[in-house]
Length: 309
Image (tube, rainbow, N blue to C red; front, side, top):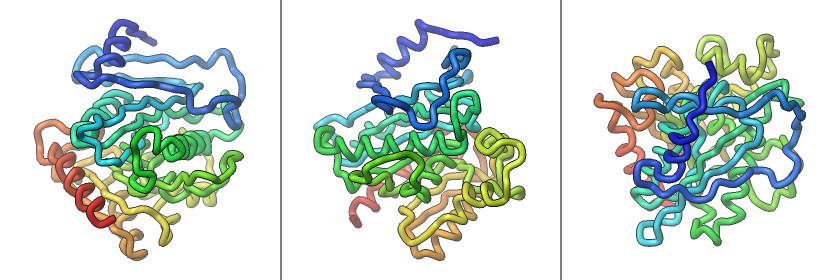
């Protein structure tokens, strides 16, 4: 049953547990590339009634960016585009989006939560590139407005969870793919990536079946599978990556992260993997186990990365 909680969502978007939400704006000012108009497809929210009830966004038709700028007193000039997970079926917009923005703001990093379109033949000419179009556009918007938002255009990264990790890795490996008309003035390449329990590969032995089916359909060609298996798309220009995964993840095998790590190492690209014994899948910032330390690991990794820039 579809549910909508207007009071909850209004309160969440205004306060976000003490973080003042800033501007949310449409990603595309005019026509959305490859858009099909279908009045029957409408965005809706469900869940979010408790700490264990994940707030989920369905059927995103008009993608947006929600901006959380770090305070002037704390900012270090870095920014991160956040891609929530959800199997390319929904977006876990709070615990893998807004709460992540709060954490990044706490140590001086500005954050932008991407509410990307979800693959849907009813509203897209080619659903396989819809999310990547939105991710590329979001990165270009952040870089284009870097001076205005007090951001260093060479310290803009991407962070993704689960299928959002696949989107973040796709942006890291397909940032220059011409998936929509653009003037190429501003690069869509992330300067770094943080991939948390990510879907990396669409190969049968590694992938999360739901993510692959939702993005590519039930009978993708091997060429399509290879193209969106991001470990096969790494080259010397792929940005540095921090990989976070739990060994006991039964949804997305941690071998996804290992596959990405191996290929980054072959190319001599800075990378680091934290494989935790506990946590499973979908924990956001973490619960009580060893995996809950990943955010501190990430903060340390970013500090070191910025020092070396």
